[in-house]
Structure formats: C-alpha cells, structure tokens
Length: 134
Image (cartoon, rainbow, N blue to C red):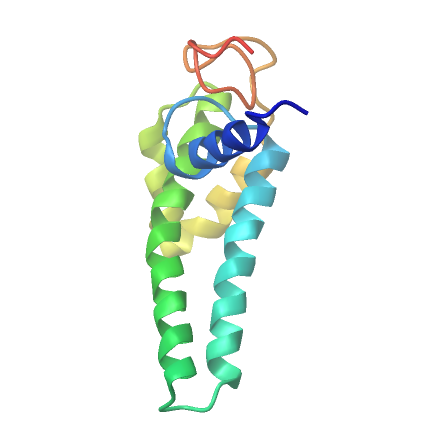
C-alpha cells in the first residue's frame, strides 16, 4: 500500500458523492445511495430514542438535518453520474426529487445497464470522465 492511498481514497469518496463528472455503475449507485440512507436513518433513530429537550436531542436533530440537506447534493451527484453511464444528460437526475417519480427513477437507475464502452461522459464505468485514464 502506497503512502498516498488514504489521499486517493478520500479523493474517490469526494468525487463519488460531491462531483458531477464521470460515470458510475449500478452497484456503486445502489450502495452509495444505501450508505446515505443508513446515515440518515441512524441520525433519525438516535434522535428518536434520545430524551427530548436535552443537549443530545439537539445534537441528533442537527445531525439529521445536516445529513438530510447535504445528502440532497450527494443524491444529485450520484444520479448525474449514473445517468452519464448510459449516455443520458445529468439534468434528468432532478427526477430523484419528485416524490411520485422517485421510486421509478431510482429503480431505473439501479437496473438499467450502462454503456459497455466509452461514451461522451467517460471512458469507462466508475471513472471520473475523459481525463481519468487509470
């Protein structure tokens, strides 16, 4: 393991959840989405079991809302990269915020296979775009 491995892992984490370039596959999308849901669920659960009007209650409420708001961007970034994997424009990821369409859009993004080779958004699935060569 090289010394820059933790830095590369952090860069990959930031790219996955916060950047809009590149492509991700079905499993990466599903697992990243699940990760966000588990984090939010954990914070909500901790808030629910904590006695009200305490410092802990305020902490977990703040943690939940911080995660909920930041996960909106992460959800958009994941959706954009998933759409890029099968050559569609990222703007369609906004359908993940329409409650009635959310389930269908999520299932589509989890089940629809990506382009097997390069497309205009990247050379390969789970890659950061055209500039990423390795």
